[in-house]
Structures are given as structure tokens and as C-alpha cells.
Length: 455
Ligand code: PLP
Image (cartoon, rainbow, N blue to C red):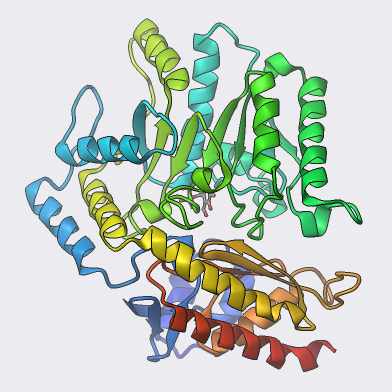
């Protein structure tokens, strides 16, 4: 694309450095400028309409035109546009939201701590875990185990938890006290003929060996997404979470469930923890909490975590952590209204029903010459592309086929995202079966259009 001088595209190239973008390539091709949203659709500056098959960044549960969220924000802006929760201050939106989150938590939880992004929330989780170990007189208990291909954000601590090379290379990460264990991806990482259960047993054994090698009294916590998102939509093999949790319990290790993508219906239950029988001590949430209309994230913590933190804050004189906008009343009011919409419209049930349809329809593509695996649960799925089905080899270099097919898909009016060679599908929870059919038809067309270029 050559941007016209002074066009919106040219000004974007001139002034705006993008997240998760090759900056030099951006100078050449410029942006796709999105101007408006309507339900599951967004429209670009030229008037072309797309199905937003990633719900933005896995996050816009209620779609892109929910007036009730606009009204909730407006009401709160008029009533009290800002207040905070430092030094004993509070306000109704955070109190209501905290109460609501504790009431819907998948396991008994004690308190909610508010932050602004998934990264900040995971950073906060790590700080709470360290603070707790000190409070308990276990200063050596500081290591956190995360997983290769897990995604937990991009701050210095949360990027360290993330197990993806692009979040570490040239950033001098990960920091100390973060270690990574194996990815529960059966298609890529299981041995030939290994069942899902046997693979899960092997991963749990690997985790136990890692804990023993590091010293069990040095390991404070394990963090994982119920379903890995940015690592390529990895659904764990049968019995995985049960076996991992048995190892953690044996060595008194806390479990942090990163529900930033899975939370609020994505997997067909309110939380991914319910779908997979996960019983966390800390549950991290963001994204669909407010449908991303405004930034907000939160940590639900149980008494195992809260009580030592409270004692330590009393000993020191304060819990010296918190963000100016953590617990901001406007995003909190939007989150509350968003949760009402999710409940009143049974969007969790919709994710289960329409999700089953999406999984079935996408799996019909598994026979395509360029498709290696289709995986997913509820309204989240990954379609992994291969140049050779038998060897599972990529085309050219890893990620090239993902980019190619994703490009054709966008031409066909569907916005997906390629994580390497896996295309992600994570549409708004309001999507209907016929809209899923439109989306899958476009994916099929994009695969067919790519085939002659590959073979
Ligand atoms: N955790 C998970 C599972 C995520 O998917 C993300 C973002 O995609 C994050 C954490 C980081 O959230 P944020 O981008 O709001 O910092």
C-alpha cells in the first residue's frame, strides 16, 4: 500500500508506533484503520465490513455496539468520574463489582484486588506471592512455574511468566525466579501413539521432577491459562489439570489461574476453571470482564493468600501496592453492566451452544490439505496449518502459511489472527450459528485460495 500524503494511513505511519507489529514493515504497508463496530462486525475506513472473529483481542463479549455499556459509562462519568481505593477510600461501583465477582467465583474466594490490564494483574499476582512468602517466614519460596507457550502479558514480570520467545528476545527476559515447564499440546508434543491421559501423566511427572530439582521449598506458585490463548489455542489433554493440581498440592504450591481470555463464558462455562475442574488460589481476569469497552482487570484471592497479606500489611503499616486507576469507578460500572448483560442474555449458554456448532463446523475443515489440527472448546478455537499433513511440516519458515491464509481471510471479510501457523477464532459471545457458518465459509475460501501458492 502506498498511503496518500496526509491520509489517515500516512499519519498513522508518521506518528504512531504499534504494539505487536514489525515497525519497518508497517512503514511500508501501513495500517488497517477500523472506523466503527456493529454487533460481531467492524468496518474499515473504506466501508468494508469484517466479521471480528477474534472479538478484538479475545475480549469483546457483547459485540461492538452495546448501548447499555455506553449508558453505564455515561451515568458513572456524571455521578463520579474518578475516585480511588488508596488509604481506605471506596465507592459503590468497586464495592458492587467486588461483591459480584466473589459471588460468581468458581471456588470460594475472599477478596478482589483491581488493576488495569492482564499484565498488571499478573504482575500483581507475582508480587502478592512474594509478599506472602515473606509474611509466612519463607523468604526462599519465591519461584513461579509457568509454561512454555503460556501467555501472561508483557510487563517485566508478566512477560517473564509468558513462555514465548518474542516476549523475551532482546528484552533481557525472563527475570530470575521464573521457570517454564512443558506445553500441554498433544498434537505437537505427545510421543507417537501416546494417549491424552498418558501425555498428561508425563507432563505432571515432568513438573514433579522440575520441582524436586529446584527444591520444593523454593517453589511458591504455578500459573496457567485453562486454555492457552496467544500460545496458539492449546486445549489441555484429558486429565491434565487434575494431575497437575495433585502435584501442586503435594508440595504446597499455590495455583494461579489466568482467566484473562477464558473468564466470563468463553469456554462454555462462566470460568475456564469450571470447564476443567481447576481450583485456583488466585484467579486473574480482564478482557471480557468489561468486554474491553474500558480497561479493567482484577484478581480474586482466597484466604490462603489474603490472610498473610493482611498480616504483613499490618506489620509494615501498609500494603504498598496499587495503581491510580485500579478500581476506577467508570470501568467498574461498565464491568457490572457487562456482567448483567452476559447473565440476562445467557451468553455463557450461547457460548456453549453456538460454540458446539463452531467446533463442529471448523472440524469439517480438518480434511483440507493445509489443515493439520482443529482444536478448541466453547467459542475459542485454533486451526493449525501445515504444508504437509503427514510430517506436520510448515511451509517455508514457521508462520509463513499462517500469514498467507490470514491475509486471504481478511480479504474475504474475516479478521482472525495467526499465532505462528495457527489461526485463532474467538468471536464475540453474541455470535449466531448462521454467522458462524459465514465465518467458516470464508475460512474455507481462504484455504482454497492459498493452496495453489503452497502446492
Ligand atoms: N493473560 C492472558 C491469558 C492474555 O491472553 C493476556 C492478553 O492477551 C494477558 C494476560 C495480558 O493482558 P493485557 O494485554 O491486558 O496486559
